[in-house]
Image (cartoon, rainbow, N blue to C red; front, side, top):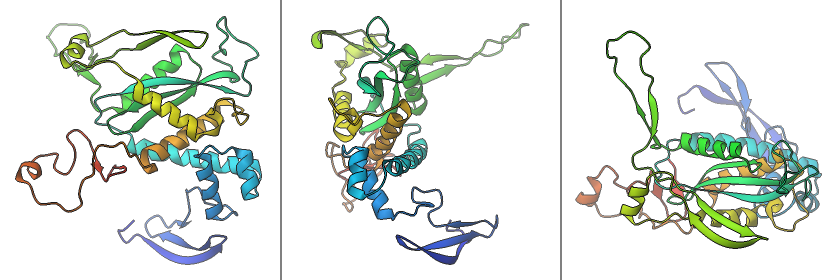
Length: 327
């Protein structure tokens, strides 16, 4: 785009008004204005599709959306499937090499298809290969910028926990250090590079002991970086990611406690969570971000000469009062 290769060649009418058809002079391909969007090849008006998607983000179930908008539940579900795919495409380029220094991870209980699975383990939880009964939504959250880094739907197993950690590790800019070894001139295979934790990394889980739903004790177990944690006078906390869990329960109808609008399988729940993740990171106003950056201000040699001029130190973006400008 904007290089003289794409030009409009015709128009056509839809339920939402007139739309254009473009042609690329290089590859000689024609495509419509809504190609590869949520609205492509839809007979329903774009306004109605947007109203359905907005209601999915404010705790309205599919049956309620179908009743209000006068569509079938399968139609609203098809819109959700396409919106979740586009949300995943939005998350991929934006959530990359994040300049965060703090990450909180937590999981949230939910159920799918039925509250109690047909086959359970000794603790009463659903089996890992089953998709009914107890399921969990795993979230990693960067409290500095209110970023929901990773969101995974799956059983409460070690494999799922490793998956969440692996996704989070891949998206953070400074997480590990690769140590290489020079050749020493001897015969044999050279020593392979070693991936080691970052020297500033502090990793510790918050362990909670409960009995019949009541919290008995809460303790931390520092796995890595105990000295740095003590020197900085910090404590291990998951308070902000717990608040994100509450935000998810208030926004998505299947996560509401004692609800009848639960999802029927794990994939439908994953689509809703991914869709909300993109909305939370890109479009949702965050009133808890620190301060606003004025559009016009007097030049400050001390500030403007800094490499981070125009942004907070370590922020990786600009704040316009309510959201991050990820450009």
